[in-house]
Image (tube, rainbow, N blue to C red; front, side):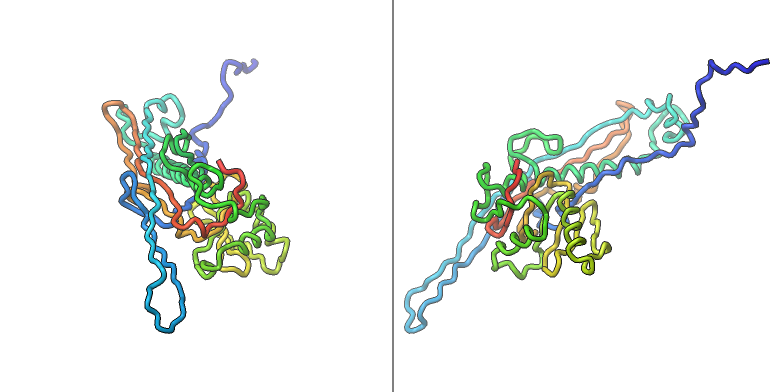
Length: 314
């Protein structure tokens, strides 16, 4: 007697399979910069500057010098992620066994924690992209239409809303080589040379290029343990300088920016909005729904202290 199994599908034990959650490199520029809360739409960043004038100290009778107050407005944009999934769609799949509780009223999702974590991580990535890449008036997948520009635009000479001049650019710098980065450090104003928040911001690819430069130039200095991953952002100290080097997913071009990180100001309504969101079962639509709502904008307090290669600005 022969055995005929041609009418049967090949066995695939889907229930035994491991479910892998797609990882997302989030990025978190906001860990380094100044945060201004309570911004509903637009608020000024108030700036103070003293122009001290020294004159002959003999019989001085006329005051000289000035105290100047200026403002740079920061505009935030409302940003919302809202979606719903019908858990009953899993009933016909192996996920129905792995992800759902028994019964026809599918109000709970066993994978809610992984789902929530992925949503927050994706939103964090979109926030970093928004801070750097947003162009005023344009529609993008990470920000929607907004009235404000991101840092790539704000720190670009010749662009709408330009904040720095051509004289401040290291125009020829396209790679994160130590020679190019040394040139940028040399161009940094001496008034801020002793600050502890001086930071190079660049893409993740440029950061890896920088690490390679350090490793090949002096293997005795390079320590792989000195590279830290802080919430989806790569950081390493610049050799023999009070400067950090940061690689973030927000920068997607050849741009390299150097300056005091705390002079960059992100405006928002409430900081906790970035980590807290709503996840609930909606009985009316029979869906598991989520909503993440924030406001976000960015501005530079003193752009004259920023050095940028001005490459590939949007």
